[in-house]
Length: 412
Image 1: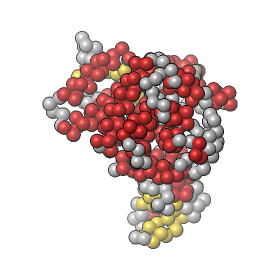
Image 2: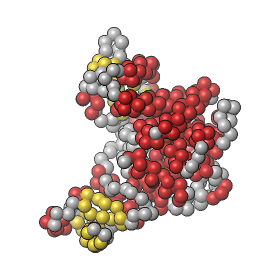
Image 3: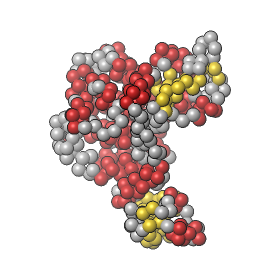
Protein backbone atom coordinates (compact mmCIF):
# COMPACT_ATOMS: atom_id res chain seq x y z
CA UNK A 1 0.00 0.00 0.00
CA UNK A 2 1.23 3.50 -0.73
CA UNK A 3 2.47 5.44 2.28
CA UNK A 4 0.17 8.43 2.59
CA UNK A 5 1.66 11.51 4.19
CA UNK A 6 0.28 14.94 3.30
CA UNK A 7 -1.46 15.60 -0.03
CA UNK A 8 -0.54 19.25 -0.28
CA UNK A 9 2.91 19.13 1.31
CA UNK A 10 4.63 16.18 -0.39
CA UNK A 11 4.37 15.88 -4.21
CA UNK A 12 5.33 12.16 -4.17
CA UNK A 13 4.22 9.01 -2.36
CA UNK A 14 6.39 5.94 -1.83
CA UNK A 15 5.35 2.49 -3.02
CA UNK A 16 7.07 -0.90 -2.54
CA UNK A 17 8.48 -1.83 -5.97
CA UNK A 18 7.07 -5.36 -5.55
CA UNK A 19 3.57 -3.90 -5.95
CA UNK A 20 4.16 -3.37 -9.68
CA UNK A 21 2.76 -6.39 -11.54
CA UNK A 22 4.51 -7.76 -14.60
CA UNK A 23 2.33 -7.47 -17.71
CA UNK A 24 0.35 -4.43 -16.54
CA UNK A 25 0.23 -0.96 -18.06
CA UNK A 26 1.28 1.69 -15.54
CA UNK A 27 -1.37 4.47 -15.36
CA UNK A 28 1.16 6.77 -13.70
CA UNK A 29 4.80 7.83 -14.11
CA UNK A 30 7.35 6.14 -11.84
CA UNK A 31 10.31 7.91 -10.24
CA UNK A 32 13.32 7.16 -8.07
CA UNK A 33 14.66 9.35 -5.29
CA UNK A 34 18.36 9.85 -4.64
CA UNK A 35 18.47 11.99 -1.52
CA UNK A 36 16.66 15.16 -2.62
CA UNK A 37 16.89 14.41 -6.35
CA UNK A 38 13.89 12.89 -8.17
CA UNK A 39 14.80 10.75 -11.20
CA UNK A 40 12.25 9.67 -13.86
CA UNK A 41 12.23 5.87 -14.33
CA UNK A 42 9.10 4.77 -16.26
CA UNK A 43 6.73 6.97 -18.25
CA UNK A 44 2.97 6.85 -17.76
CA UNK A 45 1.56 4.10 -19.99
CA UNK A 46 4.71 1.96 -19.82
CA UNK A 47 4.10 -1.79 -19.97
CA UNK A 48 5.80 -3.16 -16.88
CA UNK A 49 7.32 -6.30 -18.45
CA UNK A 50 9.99 -8.75 -17.36
CA UNK A 51 12.78 -6.46 -18.56
CA UNK A 52 11.49 -3.57 -16.43
CA UNK A 53 11.18 -5.88 -13.42
CA UNK A 54 14.77 -7.05 -13.94
CA UNK A 55 15.98 -3.43 -13.99
CA UNK A 56 14.53 -2.93 -10.52
CA UNK A 57 16.01 -6.17 -9.21
CA UNK A 58 19.47 -5.61 -10.69
CA UNK A 59 19.67 -2.10 -9.25
CA UNK A 60 18.37 -3.25 -5.88
CA UNK A 61 15.43 -0.83 -6.07
CA UNK A 62 12.86 -1.73 -3.41
CA UNK A 63 10.96 1.58 -3.31
CA UNK A 64 9.61 3.65 -6.16
CA UNK A 65 7.76 7.00 -6.13
CA UNK A 66 4.61 8.27 -7.81
CA UNK A 67 3.32 11.83 -8.03
CA UNK A 68 0.64 12.61 -5.47
CA UNK A 69 -1.44 14.02 -8.33
CA UNK A 70 -1.56 10.45 -9.70
CA UNK A 71 -2.63 9.11 -6.32
CA UNK A 72 -6.10 7.96 -7.35
CA UNK A 73 -4.72 6.11 -10.39
CA UNK A 74 -2.06 4.52 -8.18
CA UNK A 75 -4.44 3.35 -5.53
CA UNK A 76 -6.97 2.11 -8.06
CA UNK A 77 -4.15 0.10 -9.69
CA UNK A 78 -3.19 -1.44 -6.34
CA UNK A 79 -6.84 -2.00 -5.40
CA UNK A 80 -7.60 -3.87 -8.64
CA UNK A 81 -4.65 -6.14 -8.05
CA UNK A 82 -5.76 -7.19 -4.56
CA UNK A 83 -9.54 -7.09 -5.04
CA UNK A 84 -10.89 -10.65 -4.75
CA UNK A 85 -13.26 -12.00 -7.35
CA UNK A 86 -16.76 -11.89 -5.90
CA UNK A 87 -19.72 -13.71 -7.31
CA UNK A 88 -23.09 -12.17 -6.59
CA UNK A 89 -25.39 -14.64 -4.79
CA UNK A 90 -28.91 -15.49 -5.84
CA UNK A 91 -31.70 -13.33 -4.43
CA UNK A 92 -32.83 -15.75 -1.72
CA UNK A 93 -29.26 -16.21 -0.44
CA UNK A 94 -28.70 -12.47 -0.30
CA UNK A 95 -32.03 -11.85 1.44
CA UNK A 96 -31.12 -14.41 4.10
CA UNK A 97 -27.70 -12.77 4.45
CA UNK A 98 -29.29 -9.37 5.10
CA UNK A 99 -31.71 -10.93 7.60
CA UNK A 100 -28.82 -12.65 9.40
CA UNK A 101 -27.04 -9.30 9.79
CA UNK A 102 -30.10 -7.75 11.39
CA UNK A 103 -30.63 -10.69 13.77
CA UNK A 104 -27.09 -10.62 15.14
CA UNK A 105 -24.70 -8.11 16.66
CA UNK A 106 -21.15 -7.44 15.44
CA UNK A 107 -18.48 -7.65 18.16
CA UNK A 108 -14.86 -6.53 18.22
CA UNK A 109 -12.48 -9.33 17.19
CA UNK A 110 -9.59 -7.75 19.16
CA UNK A 111 -11.46 -8.41 22.40
CA UNK A 112 -11.49 -12.18 21.86
CA UNK A 113 -8.53 -13.33 23.95
CA UNK A 114 -7.10 -16.82 23.24
CA UNK A 115 -7.48 -18.97 26.33
CA UNK A 116 -10.44 -16.98 27.68
CA UNK A 117 -13.65 -18.81 28.57
CA UNK A 118 -16.97 -17.58 27.18
CA UNK A 119 -20.60 -18.49 27.88
CA UNK A 120 -22.06 -17.12 24.63
CA UNK A 121 -21.86 -18.56 21.12
CA UNK A 122 -19.83 -16.94 18.35
CA UNK A 123 -20.98 -16.85 14.74
CA UNK A 124 -19.06 -15.84 11.63
CA UNK A 125 -20.61 -13.94 8.73
CA UNK A 126 -18.69 -14.12 5.47
CA UNK A 127 -19.39 -14.67 1.79
CA UNK A 128 -23.12 -14.21 2.37
CA UNK A 129 -23.28 -17.08 4.87
CA UNK A 130 -23.73 -17.13 8.65
CA UNK A 131 -22.35 -20.15 10.47
CA UNK A 132 -21.58 -21.21 14.03
CA UNK A 133 -17.94 -20.51 14.87
CA UNK A 134 -17.81 -21.52 18.54
CA UNK A 135 -20.89 -22.82 20.38
CA UNK A 136 -21.06 -21.97 24.08
CA UNK A 137 -23.62 -21.60 26.87
CA UNK A 138 -23.51 -20.90 30.60
CA UNK A 139 -23.95 -24.63 31.18
CA UNK A 140 -21.29 -25.56 28.60
CA UNK A 141 -18.65 -22.80 28.32
CA UNK A 142 -16.07 -22.80 25.53
CA UNK A 143 -12.46 -21.64 25.29
CA UNK A 144 -11.36 -19.15 22.62
CA UNK A 145 -8.39 -20.41 20.60
CA UNK A 146 -6.20 -19.02 17.80
CA UNK A 147 -8.43 -20.60 15.17
CA UNK A 148 -11.35 -18.50 16.36
CA UNK A 149 -9.32 -15.29 16.48
CA UNK A 150 -7.86 -15.79 13.00
CA UNK A 151 -11.05 -16.86 11.21
CA UNK A 152 -11.87 -14.38 8.41
CA UNK A 153 -15.27 -12.70 8.41
CA UNK A 154 -17.33 -10.70 10.88
CA UNK A 155 -17.69 -12.20 14.35
CA UNK A 156 -21.28 -11.96 15.59
CA UNK A 157 -23.33 -12.86 18.65
CA UNK A 158 -27.06 -13.11 19.26
CA UNK A 159 -28.61 -10.01 20.88
CA UNK A 160 -30.04 -12.08 23.74
CA UNK A 161 -26.49 -13.07 24.73
CA UNK A 162 -25.21 -9.49 25.02
CA UNK A 163 -25.42 -9.62 28.88
CA UNK A 164 -23.00 -12.59 28.84
CA UNK A 165 -20.75 -10.70 26.44
CA UNK A 166 -20.71 -7.66 28.74
CA UNK A 167 -19.86 -9.93 31.68
CA UNK A 168 -16.96 -11.29 29.63
CA UNK A 169 -15.70 -7.73 28.98
CA UNK A 170 -15.88 -6.96 32.69
CA UNK A 171 -13.83 -10.08 33.40
CA UNK A 172 -11.13 -8.89 31.00
CA UNK A 173 -11.00 -5.47 32.66
CA UNK A 174 -10.71 -6.94 36.15
CA UNK A 175 -8.22 -9.71 35.36
CA UNK A 176 -5.10 -9.45 37.53
CA UNK A 177 -2.80 -10.32 34.62
CA UNK A 178 -4.12 -7.41 32.57
CA UNK A 179 -1.51 -4.65 32.57
CA UNK A 180 -2.57 -1.06 33.25
CA UNK A 181 -1.79 -0.02 29.67
CA UNK A 182 -3.84 -2.90 28.28
CA UNK A 183 -6.63 -2.17 30.75
CA UNK A 184 -6.92 1.41 29.48
CA UNK A 185 -7.16 0.12 25.92
CA UNK A 186 -9.81 -2.39 26.93
CA UNK A 187 -11.80 0.38 28.62
CA UNK A 188 -11.83 2.31 25.35
CA UNK A 189 -12.85 -0.83 23.49
CA UNK A 190 -15.68 -1.24 25.99
CA UNK A 191 -16.80 2.34 25.26
CA UNK A 192 -16.83 1.48 21.57
CA UNK A 193 -18.73 -1.77 22.07
CA UNK A 194 -21.36 -0.13 24.28
CA UNK A 195 -21.75 2.71 21.78
CA UNK A 196 -22.30 0.28 18.91
CA UNK A 197 -24.82 -1.68 20.96
CA UNK A 198 -26.78 1.46 21.88
CA UNK A 199 -26.79 2.60 18.23
CA UNK A 200 -28.01 -0.78 17.00
CA UNK A 201 -30.84 -0.77 19.53
CA UNK A 202 -31.66 2.84 18.64
CA UNK A 203 -31.83 2.02 14.93
CA UNK A 204 -34.20 -0.83 15.79
CA UNK A 205 -36.31 1.58 17.90
CA UNK A 206 -35.38 5.11 16.71
CA UNK A 207 -37.90 6.94 18.89
CA UNK A 208 -36.54 5.46 22.10
CA UNK A 209 -35.85 8.37 24.40
CA UNK A 210 -33.89 6.05 26.68
CA UNK A 211 -31.49 5.01 23.90
CA UNK A 212 -31.00 8.59 22.75
CA UNK A 213 -30.17 9.56 26.33
CA UNK A 214 -27.71 6.66 26.54
CA UNK A 215 -26.16 7.79 23.23
CA UNK A 216 -25.59 11.26 24.67
CA UNK A 217 -23.96 9.74 27.76
CA UNK A 218 -21.64 7.63 25.58
CA UNK A 219 -20.59 10.69 23.56
CA UNK A 220 -19.66 12.49 26.77
CA UNK A 221 -17.58 9.47 27.82
CA UNK A 222 -15.99 9.32 24.37
CA UNK A 223 -15.07 13.01 24.38
CA UNK A 224 -13.59 12.71 27.87
CA UNK A 225 -11.46 9.76 26.75
CA UNK A 226 -10.15 11.56 23.66
CA UNK A 227 -9.44 14.76 25.60
CA UNK A 228 -7.39 12.73 28.09
CA UNK A 229 -5.45 10.98 25.36
CA UNK A 230 -5.87 12.13 21.76
CA UNK A 231 -4.37 8.93 20.35
CA UNK A 232 -7.10 7.00 22.22
CA UNK A 233 -9.38 7.72 19.28
CA UNK A 234 -7.74 4.86 17.36
CA UNK A 235 -9.01 2.38 19.99
CA UNK A 236 -12.53 3.76 19.61
CA UNK A 237 -12.65 3.03 15.87
CA UNK A 238 -13.84 -0.16 14.19
CA UNK A 239 -11.47 -0.54 11.25
CA UNK A 240 -11.64 -4.14 10.05
CA UNK A 241 -15.10 -5.36 9.23
CA UNK A 242 -16.10 -7.42 6.23
CA UNK A 243 -19.35 -5.58 5.61
CA UNK A 244 -21.10 -2.29 6.29
CA UNK A 245 -23.07 -1.79 9.51
CA UNK A 246 -24.84 1.52 10.08
CA UNK A 247 -24.26 1.38 13.84
CA UNK A 248 -20.50 0.78 13.44
CA UNK A 249 -20.26 3.54 10.83
CA UNK A 250 -22.12 5.92 13.16
CA UNK A 251 -19.68 5.35 16.02
CA UNK A 252 -16.70 5.80 13.68
CA UNK A 253 -18.13 9.08 12.37
CA UNK A 254 -18.65 10.31 15.93
CA UNK A 255 -15.09 9.44 16.99
CA UNK A 256 -13.45 10.97 13.92
CA UNK A 257 -15.67 14.05 14.04
CA UNK A 258 -14.73 14.69 17.66
CA UNK A 259 -11.06 14.21 16.78
CA UNK A 260 -11.31 16.62 13.84
CA UNK A 261 -13.29 19.09 15.94
CA UNK A 262 -10.53 19.01 18.53
CA UNK A 263 -7.92 19.63 15.81
CA UNK A 264 -10.04 22.59 14.66
CA UNK A 265 -9.89 24.08 18.17
CA UNK A 266 -13.39 23.34 19.49
CA UNK A 267 -13.94 23.40 23.26
CA UNK A 268 -15.29 20.48 25.26
CA UNK A 269 -19.00 21.34 25.17
CA UNK A 270 -18.89 22.03 21.44
CA UNK A 271 -17.13 18.69 20.94
CA UNK A 272 -19.94 16.95 22.82
CA UNK A 273 -22.59 18.77 20.78
CA UNK A 274 -20.80 17.85 17.53
CA UNK A 275 -20.30 14.27 18.70
CA UNK A 276 -23.99 13.81 19.48
CA UNK A 277 -25.00 14.97 16.02
CA UNK A 278 -22.32 12.81 14.39
CA UNK A 279 -23.36 9.75 16.42
CA UNK A 280 -27.01 10.20 15.41
CA UNK A 281 -26.43 11.42 11.84
CA UNK A 282 -27.79 8.26 10.17
CA UNK A 283 -30.75 7.51 12.45
CA UNK A 284 -33.01 8.31 9.51
CA UNK A 285 -31.79 5.16 7.76
CA UNK A 286 -34.06 3.26 10.13
CA UNK A 287 -36.93 4.53 7.94
CA UNK A 288 -35.34 3.26 4.70
CA UNK A 289 -36.17 -0.27 3.46
CA UNK A 290 -33.32 -2.68 4.30
CA UNK A 291 -33.38 -3.89 0.69
CA UNK A 292 -32.07 -0.45 -0.32
CA UNK A 293 -29.63 -0.01 2.58
CA UNK A 294 -28.07 -3.41 1.85
CA UNK A 295 -28.41 -3.50 -1.92
CA UNK A 296 -25.53 -5.35 -3.58
CA UNK A 297 -24.58 -2.78 -6.17
CA UNK A 298 -25.34 0.69 -7.42
CA UNK A 299 -28.71 2.21 -6.53
CA UNK A 300 -31.03 3.15 -9.37
CA UNK A 301 -32.51 6.66 -9.57
CA UNK A 302 -35.62 5.82 -7.55
CA UNK A 303 -33.63 4.04 -4.84
CA UNK A 304 -31.15 6.93 -4.63
CA UNK A 305 -34.05 9.37 -4.25
CA UNK A 306 -35.39 7.25 -1.38
CA UNK A 307 -32.05 6.92 0.41
CA UNK A 308 -31.54 10.68 0.29
CA UNK A 309 -34.65 11.06 2.47
CA UNK A 310 -32.76 9.56 5.43
CA UNK A 311 -31.50 13.07 6.29
CA UNK A 312 -34.97 14.61 6.71
CA UNK A 313 -36.29 11.39 8.26
CA UNK A 314 -33.53 11.55 10.85
CA UNK A 315 -34.31 15.16 11.67
CA UNK A 316 -38.02 14.38 12.05
CA UNK A 317 -37.30 11.48 14.42
CA UNK A 318 -34.78 13.34 16.55
CA UNK A 319 -36.72 16.62 16.79
CA UNK A 320 -39.17 14.81 19.07
CA UNK A 321 -36.44 14.48 21.72
CA UNK A 322 -35.67 17.55 23.82
CA UNK A 323 -32.45 16.07 25.22
CA UNK A 324 -30.58 16.72 21.95
CA UNK A 325 -28.77 20.11 21.75
CA UNK A 326 -30.08 22.32 18.97
CA UNK A 327 -26.69 22.64 17.27
CA UNK A 328 -26.34 18.84 17.08
CA UNK A 329 -28.97 18.91 14.32
CA UNK A 330 -26.49 20.77 12.11
CA UNK A 331 -24.41 17.59 11.80
CA UNK A 332 -27.55 15.52 11.11
CA UNK A 333 -29.01 17.85 8.49
CA UNK A 334 -25.79 18.87 6.71
CA UNK A 335 -23.56 15.78 6.55
CA UNK A 336 -24.44 15.31 2.86
CA UNK A 337 -24.25 18.99 1.91
CA UNK A 338 -21.30 20.11 -0.23
CA UNK A 339 -19.63 23.52 -0.48
CA UNK A 340 -20.22 23.46 -4.24
CA UNK A 341 -23.99 23.22 -3.74
CA UNK A 342 -24.04 19.70 -5.22
CA UNK A 343 -25.08 18.04 -1.97
CA UNK A 344 -28.47 17.27 -0.46
CA UNK A 345 -31.11 17.75 0.85
CA UNK A 346 -31.01 21.57 0.55
CA UNK A 347 -28.14 22.23 -1.90
CA UNK A 348 -26.49 24.52 0.63
CA UNK A 349 -23.29 26.31 -0.41
CA UNK A 350 -20.13 27.67 1.22
CA UNK A 351 -21.00 29.73 4.33
CA UNK A 352 -24.50 28.26 4.46
CA UNK A 353 -22.87 25.07 5.76
CA UNK A 354 -21.99 25.13 9.46
CA UNK A 355 -18.62 23.91 10.78
CA UNK A 356 -20.36 20.79 12.15
CA UNK A 357 -21.71 20.02 8.68
CA UNK A 358 -18.30 20.57 7.09
CA UNK A 359 -16.65 18.21 9.56
CA UNK A 360 -19.19 15.40 9.33
CA UNK A 361 -19.33 15.58 5.52
CA UNK A 362 -15.59 14.81 5.30
CA UNK A 363 -15.67 12.11 7.95
CA UNK A 364 -18.86 10.43 6.70
CA UNK A 365 -17.50 10.23 3.14
CA UNK A 366 -14.12 8.92 4.28
CA UNK A 367 -15.49 6.19 6.56
CA UNK A 368 -18.02 5.04 3.96
CA UNK A 369 -15.30 4.69 1.30
CA UNK A 370 -12.89 2.81 3.56
CA UNK A 371 -15.49 0.32 4.81
CA UNK A 372 -15.75 -3.15 3.31
CA UNK A 373 -18.98 -4.17 1.60
CA UNK A 374 -20.29 -7.68 1.06
CA UNK A 375 -19.99 -7.12 -2.68
CA UNK A 376 -16.96 -4.82 -2.86
CA UNK A 377 -13.59 -4.44 -1.06
CA UNK A 378 -12.92 -1.31 0.95
CA UNK A 379 -10.90 1.48 -0.63
CA UNK A 380 -7.66 2.34 1.14
CA UNK A 381 -7.28 5.52 3.21
CA UNK A 382 -4.97 6.92 0.53
CA UNK A 383 -7.55 6.38 -2.21
CA UNK A 384 -10.36 7.85 -0.11
CA UNK A 385 -8.40 10.95 0.89
CA UNK A 386 -7.08 11.47 -2.64
CA UNK A 387 -10.61 11.25 -4.03
CA UNK A 388 -12.01 13.66 -1.44
CA UNK A 389 -9.14 16.06 -2.08
CA UNK A 390 -9.82 16.04 -5.80
CA UNK A 391 -13.36 17.15 -5.02
CA UNK A 392 -11.85 20.41 -3.77
CA UNK A 393 -15.00 22.42 -4.43
CA UNK A 394 -17.07 20.11 -2.26
CA UNK A 395 -15.07 19.98 0.98
CA UNK A 396 -13.36 22.45 3.30
CA UNK A 397 -9.67 22.20 2.39
CA UNK A 398 -8.35 23.50 5.70
CA UNK A 399 -10.39 20.93 7.59
CA UNK A 400 -9.23 18.26 5.15
CA UNK A 401 -5.60 19.11 5.88
CA UNK A 402 -6.28 18.80 9.60
CA UNK A 403 -8.06 15.50 9.00
CA UNK A 404 -5.07 14.10 7.09
CA UNK A 405 -2.70 15.17 9.85
CA UNK A 406 -4.99 13.65 12.47
CA UNK A 407 -5.16 10.28 10.67
CA UNK A 408 -1.37 10.29 10.36
CA UNK A 409 -1.05 10.79 14.12
CA UNK A 410 -3.56 8.03 14.87
CA UNK A 411 -1.60 5.53 12.76
CA UNK A 412 1.82 6.60 14.03
